Image (cartoon, rainbow, N blue to C red; front, side, top):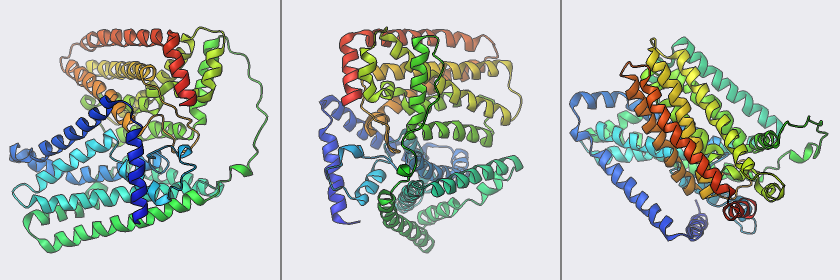
Length: 502
């Protein structure tokens, strides 16, 4: 990487920091960073306080933990269309930002992801377990080299896919490759060969390198750490070139017809149904949302089926999937209107209809993702769940979906963002706002899932229902409050101005 790329990256981050107008937000971000650092140190020191049997179990699960992080580091930039941007591309048209700078920005923003941070905490814990009683610094160096290598490799692979998708032939190759990988995973799950594949995972070599560093076997440690460092350097160089190649490739959108005849559709029965149909089309026409919706429909369901999640854990899983679906566009639902927000606001209708249509489309998305995961989990779940567990799973999915919709609409009214959603890497909110919003969605759904899990252990069928009623009442009150706030002309004008013009 050249010095100029790093200089540009520092300038972009400095500009992003200056764009945060609220001092309280800046202080909150600094406190979050300090908290994460303290949490990492706390997790690293937890190995000495665990029982030997617990440490042994954690060490046995280390290859799966490192493999899970590797899959996440590759899939996340693919779903983001090459990684996140420090600033939206349309705001940098007048500035000569190099492709290497964009590639480095995607790597630098990779940690701005709650799931990525949770995986890092898991790797820190596993490294602490593997190096207990030995040289922890050497083991940590190997883990750090692995994180750097796999993150850079994932970004390089994502930009390769972006470049291939610029042509019709490339999109066909990517589609068939993705379908082949998905089919291979399903075959492995169906034939029961997934366990054997995990036993021969390449991450076992990384685990051996960490253990070698802790035990003082410097030859094996140097070989593993050096190989990982070499992969990281090569991935950085290759990724920068791949990013430049992908950005220079002309797309074939101009080869297609710019317009086409759209058949006239029958009029909807009510204005609300018309707005809902427009919002659904807005979600599907955005490349980033369309790709994210497909990922939400496939990956969680495949993971639930492949992992054979037991009924007790299946109670918590729908909440996590619902939170992920809410991040698709729910935290900034009014961005679906974009420049059309001004026109919609000028039409003679009840202003609550616009907010109501966003809530309905968001509910469909969240409930659909959670329902697919529940069905896939039931198909492959070992054993037979009790009646109370079935009720808890269904009510947990519905309640967590309601929590996500309520919090998403509240955030959309309180803190809207401009997002055109025309490019494959466009996001509904800035990276920092997405991270805070993901924490605001994941934490309450996890708490609700744990409460439902506890109620299912009582073997009293109405216990999950007793948990559902007050939570749904709170969600209904929150939605009613958000609708009332949107009906306020001052608040509605601010939302329209932000999502339409920034």
